[in-house]
Length: 211
Ligand SMILES: Nc1ncnc2c1ncn2[C@@H]1O[C@H](COP(=O)(O)OP(=O)(O)OP(=O)(O)O)[C@@H](O)[C@H]1O
Ligand SMILES: [Mg+2]
Image (cartoon, rainbow, N blue to C red; front, side, top):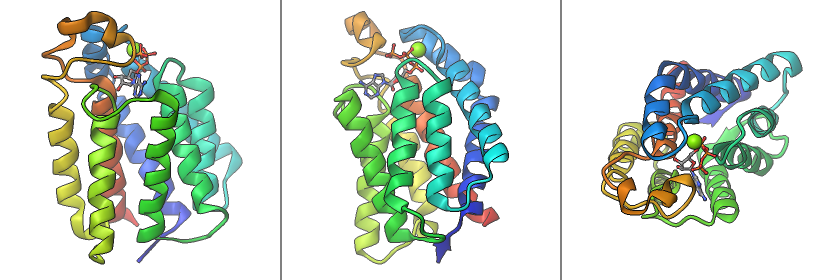
């Protein structure tokens, strides 16, 4: 099974739909422990990405993701813009110009994206950020790849794991970003970036159905 540029466009469309539907929700989460802009930022970024995909018509999966990353970098702002922008660009770069991506390559791309997020933001698991969803999901997928399983085989588990890790940020104290300024008062709230990351992985899985 391989993933074409149409798959990645569909993924970005689904991600964008979730971000639009959950703009208020993400904004409320960020209002509790940040500055209340995460939903607005991400929705604006995803819409800019879709527009840029339409106007540039990229020719490969890698180019689709690099285009999305550049659009997010220049339009999302805040912490999430560079973090998501880097994630999409690193993943796109790892695909080169290949017209079709295998499951192994997809998972390697997600690892590159996670490494990019961690290099830039310096966050580790347990610090109440998007890394709390990304790292366990990527590690799980790497284990699955070793056993010869595809993303399609484990989609239900991926979505459940991402949701569980998103919720696991509630009792955490934030150590990175604006939320960390709250100290112990950041405890008891779900992290907005972990929440948008849950939508990221849910979208990646749901795009398979439309491939
Ligand atoms: N250093 C970091 N590493 C990884 N993720 C981070 C980091 N800092 C913030 N985040 C993620 O970004 C989310 C906030 O994104 P937002 O779009 O609201 O940007 P922001 O308002 O500039 O954020 P912040 O003020 O937290 O830096 C957080 O919920 C968290 O998941
Ligand atoms: Mg914010």
